[in-house]
Image 1 (spheres, rainbow, N blue to C red):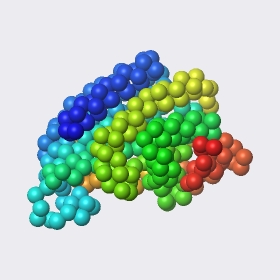
Image 2 (cartoon, helix red, strand yellow):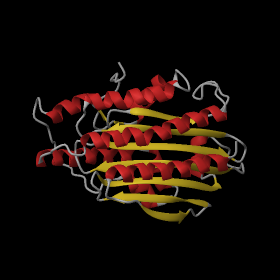
Image 3 (cartoon, rainbow, N blue to C red):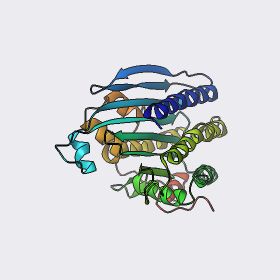
Length: 305
């Protein structure tokens, strides 16, 4: 399997997801920004704004090539003198809705290949409701479990735990949302993270994850797009967006790595919302929906049983 085949799938996935989101939103259309990377390759950044449902969102495709950056060499324990080049390709998505009852969603699916033949897949999908609706969280996780189970029974329990640990805000002692799945360094024919699966089998799993995005999120958009909301609920949405920003700028590996290695800033920061607020020492009223949501922003919640 050549990297060109994987790139072609990711580009087609971007097209299909954009079409599904535009159709469900009903008003907004994606604007495309083509760019080239300084070391080789480039991408298609697509931004959607001011729609019926989506206030701001991005669906990005990239395929970047070049010499392995010293920062990545260190992370991967590569010898400083080795002549390594890489290809990295994938799709990254974040959606910020107008209505505080429609959740934020993130997905990333990616492939990385070194010139020595080493390669792996990574990615994940997670849901960040401003107000946790337990029925929605169960629907989301059950869909992901069904997708994982088609490929390996160990994937969902391992990757959902990994998501809890990854999408966590240590300085707030809370998870970013209700989790999902997260995986990285899935290498073919290795015992461990890839469960000994072939490259083709791992790619089939990554395809499954990517193709579940549009039906899951458009269903949640349709369910909550017309829910009434108050100004108080809108202000809570802005506070929760602030938590999202804190995670992405302080803890997210991809954001930090992209900025440290002179990546394309506009595409990297596409994930940030159009508006977010911070209020000093805000404490929700006991028994409120806001307080109940905070109780559920923790690791280890079983959403599939």
